[in-house]
Length: 157
Image (cartoon, rainbow, N blue to C red; front, side):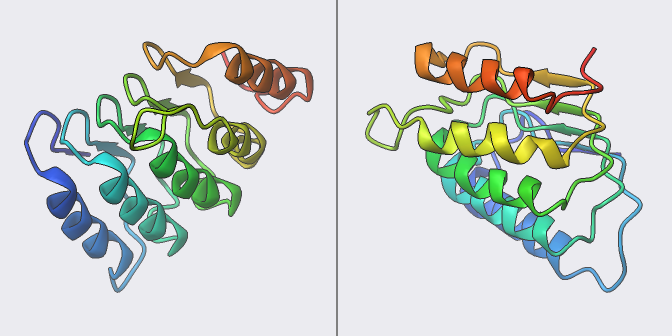
């Protein structure tokens, strides 16, 4: 378990942590990673997505990225990591309060959310997905409904 929640790491701090995860000499047996409210923003989440693609943290079961203002740009990189089966054991994913359908300027951007809904099929073990207080809107709800209809969440409780 690694919990650095509620620490003002900022993008640079999360990027440094991500480099450590990415360049680990051996796979890590990390099951829980909590980065809630670390001020990661888009750049920190993008670095984390890149680190996950190195597949050094494939045993991760709980990932808390809530309240980091990742926006649509951060979600895009994170979706790519999920789509590459970088987190095959993930059971709990907390993405609440991240403005997932807004770009850095506050404009709506639903494409990364739609990509995430497609990529989540690779995380078939997912039991809990928290998207609360993300102000998703109608288009995101439609993408979520399509994912449910396509059985992309077979283990969701």
